[in-house]
Amino acid sequence: MEKSEWTIPDLLQLSGSYWGVCSLHAGVRLDVFTALHGGTHSAGEVAAACSCDSRAMEMLLNALTAQGLLEKGPGGYTNTPFSSQNLVKGQPGYLGYIILHHHHLVPGWAQLHKAIINGAPVGRDFPQEDEAAERESFLMGMFNLASQLAPRIAAAVDLTGCQRLLDFGGGPGTYAVHFCRQNPGLGAVVYDLPSSRAFAEDIITRYGLGDRISFASGNYHLDQAPNGFDVAWLSHILHAEGPEGCRTILRKAAQALQPGGMLLVQEFILNDAKDGPSFPALFSLNMLLATSSGRSYSEIELRGMMEEAGLSGTSRLTIDLPNGAGIMVGIRE
Image 1 (cartoon, one colour):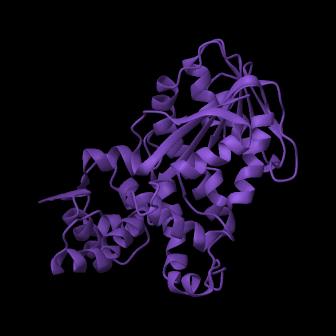
Image 2 (image 1 turned 180 degrees about the horizontal axis):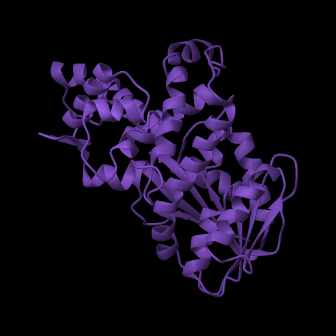
């Protein structure tokens, strides 16, 4: 929320905005939208389907209706077209995993003042839910978000003449998949921890690209990445690192390129004063809560670190992306 002039109602709305957020999180966590899929149901029917108290469920459904995520009529509640597309589990546009990831971050954000006092992550001195479920929500959430952006980015980035792409720290390989779909002559390697292999290979197989995309296991903190590539892609990796860690990763990524090869770096990018845009500035606090030295970086900082890694002609591509995201490009000398 970026405002030049504030009013008392604005301030109070911001302060209490977590009420609506937590209502959404509860609806997704309880799978309310899936229970409503394809029909109209009473609060009692939804409560029974979700193993919840009927009175409490009615309050939640009314709150979600008030926020425009449900519709209410004489027969009960129904999903809006938007909710049917994005909040029903199993639908192609389902965003529940990233919403659950946000839900898992809430306890840490409630202790932000402690992180500010100590200058360090708050740790997990609060109840932890199922670790496997939290990891699933993170990985699937990142996949869901990348699946929405990757086709648009792949169409906007000119990879004419490139034959080999390295998806550096690529997780499930979402971007490798869409770059290859956009560029028929391109092959790719997804480079990430062994724990990401099964997920990545499943995604690669799902898109029918097993003959063009492979997975290489490695830890970019400890190992040297594969080399000989025309282009390398780093998406939202640097914000988890301090400046020295960024320099090391950028140097390894640059070394993976052939001379004249292109490095593409996607990040949430601050302005040079570091006081905006809003999302990258808030995301820095998220990194304070979760990492020892991570934060958002400004365009001038990213350009400087890329040049130190041996890249020239560094610039920001003119692609309009949400949440202050941007893509930096540099060429290996």
